Length: 180
Ligand code: ATP
Ligand code: MG
Image (cartoon, rainbow, N blue to C red; front, top):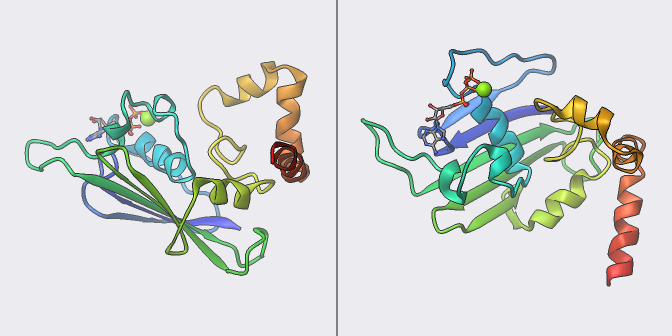
């Protein structure tokens, strides 16, 4: 399982449709200050369901939508699609390729799609449980994350290990069952 493709349209500093294809291996994104490197990692977290605008380095919901420039008008919506190669079947779904799409409008409305079909944020969260993928999961190590893991109390730190060894799903299902 690996990140295969990321497509941005109207997201932050990417008004034009921008397609980034990743090979199975290491990819480094380089560029001058302010060229949009961090916006790309913000897009990955956003499409995986990030709801906290602060952690996407914005103040309000619409800050993820292209705000316009000297030459270009602001956009009314933005869209990010993330494709995962699942030919090893690591994610428990019948597809060998998985595309998650999120679209958001200036009025705050946000839609999620899984392989083209509308879905809920909850469906995406449940699909990735125990895979290490997810907005808060260890597949995304942002600045300060390692320090945070090391200095957290043991209960919080344990969540990382629960996810790695596949217990998080059962813990989640138990909580859901108790709630209903
Ligand atoms: P550094 O090397 O300094 O970390 P970076 O390559 O990570 O830079 P980013 O933080 O990804 O750069 O991009 C910052 C740029 O994105 C700024 O120029 C900012 O104006 C632009 N930007 C952010 N949000 C929007 C938006 N909604 N509309 C248009 N441009 C935006
Ligand atoms: Mg940056």
